[in-house]
Image (cartoon, rainbow, N blue to C red):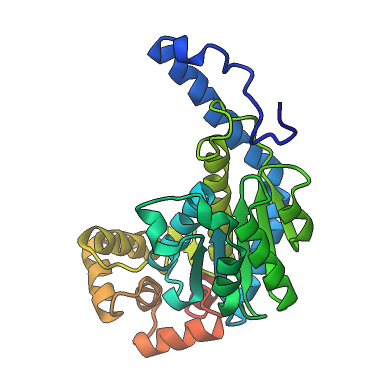
Length: 295
C-alpha cells in the first residue's frame, strides 16, 4: 500500500474485474460520491482562496491556472468558462498546461516532469497575479516548479492537492487539501481526485464571481450572450430581476447593447445606458448597490 492516498488500493477493488456490470458501476459510483464529499472539509480553505483570486482580479492581476495531466484538464475546464459565464476578460485568465495545446489531443505524461518547460511557461507570471496550481499527488514537478517561481516573484499561490502533507500544499499561500479516498482503479486520479478537483474549482470560481459582483440572486448578470440560447437566458434574467415581462426585458436588452446589468437598471429607472453605466462604475460593478440609486 502506498502512503499516498492517490496511489493506494481501494478496499473494494479486489475482484472488481469479476463483478457483474451493475455491481462494478455501483462500486465506481460510490467511489465518486465519497470523493465529492471530501470537498466539504476544504470549504474554509476555498473561502480563503477566493479572497486571493478576487483580490488579484480587483487589482488588475490575472488568474493563472497551472496543472498537468487530468488535473490540468480540470483547471483548464474551469478557466475557459469564466469569460463566457461571468464576463471576466479573456486576457485576465491564463492557463499553463504541461505540454501546452498538444495535451488536448495526446495527454502524454512526460511534460509533467519537465522543469525547463515549467520555467519557460512561468515567464509570464507577475507579482499582481494569483497562481492556482493543482496536482492530485501534490508533487508534480511542473506544478511545483511554477509555484516556486510564482512565490519568488511575489504572486499569490493557491495549491490544490489530494494528499495530505504534499509539497505543493506546504509552499502555497492557501493550501486546499481534497482528502479523497483511494481510487477504485489505483492511481487513476482522473476519477475520484479529478471529480473533487472539478467541484472545488467550480466552488472557487463561483465564489470569486460572487465577490466581484458577477452574480445577483443566483443569476449570472455578466453573462456573455453570444448565441441564441444565451440571449434568451439573458433576457429572462432581466425579466426576473426587474419584474417585467420578456418583451419589455428584450427591449431593455436592446437599449443596453446586450448588458444584463444595464438593462436591469434601465428597467429600474435609469434615464439611459450612460446613466446606468455610471451607476455601475460608482458601485464597483455591483448591481445590487447600483439599483439602490434608483429606488
